[in-house]
Length: 304
Length: 160
Image (cartoon, rainbow over all chains, first blue to last red):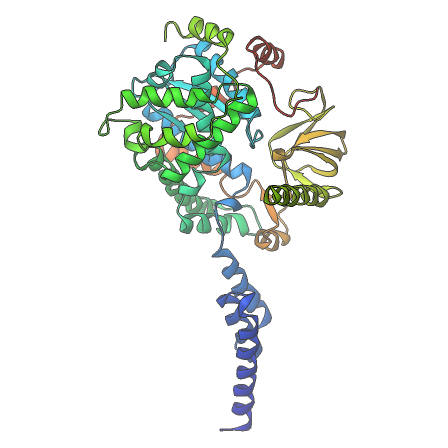
């Protein structure tokens, strides 16, 4: 072995040892870059680039800016409205929007990039959807199932809680999030050229598919549904709505539940499964259903 | 009993530490437009408007509301309207690549944006008219106040 080869081997051993020391605070990529840099097989700039790539591997839904959440939300909302027509009734939509605003102010995340927005869908199926951008939809079938304003608020609060907890974003594949957040359209020194936008749009399409597939067919996880129910109870209590309205609504849903039916049955655990968890967090001193609210509900919902 | 008291004091320490950590910090407005309000409440009178990426200094933390200083003036904001990680406008300099790799800095206008939406929209043949309509629905804060009062409801965190 020549003197040069020996010294290279020695440097390598020292570098590997150093890397092992740092193993608790670094990643494998970090170690590779450190070793490469120390042995002179790569230069400092290349090592920095490898470390950056390593960091890129760790991107998650939390790294989306609120602005990007909004654009994901808008396209998911457009897909919902492509499948279900909007219910054109200003009075009902405005009523839902007003209850929605109160529910939002009582949530842990009242501010999104753009305001939350609410829309009734013209469909008899019992269903509701929320996008990562705060677009909330309730079908006419769902609205009809509610017997008072507090129950309507309960359904809205459950959907708002899905947004607050970023459940929609969590259904996007990690590989897609990483690809989106490290694409040349973001990291390039200049604003993106046509080719880069085309590549990013392809990732965007996959992202929208991930979220809409969850909304229409796969459903959120059971634990996400439980979290949304618990979040809804908290919201209702803070706003002065009766948290028990979520339980009464679930009871009614349970009575009509067809496990193999369309809509919610496909994407949600059975209401009876959810009821026990909801009842467990209700309190004796919770606000109750107020007849003044029920009265305006009856007046506005009469013809829905 | 002791356990509960311990948990409460730990909670208090964490809350105080979190508030202390934010005070004096420069943070970015994380929403398209934010209203600076006279008091720490959602419905307090508006004193100024802030825009996405505006930088503000946190002067005081009260519950979920922050008193901040901005070039537009001082006022209160809900903490969900700001980001502790800086959000900066993407300038077309060589800085962009470095910034994009800095996980504590986000670039506004990059990534999934209006341009990507336009392209997606034309490729899919999707209409966004309904989305625009629901986003643009007119709102009136006086009517909201009346609705809350008439229905015996409340807006949490509101001292106004």
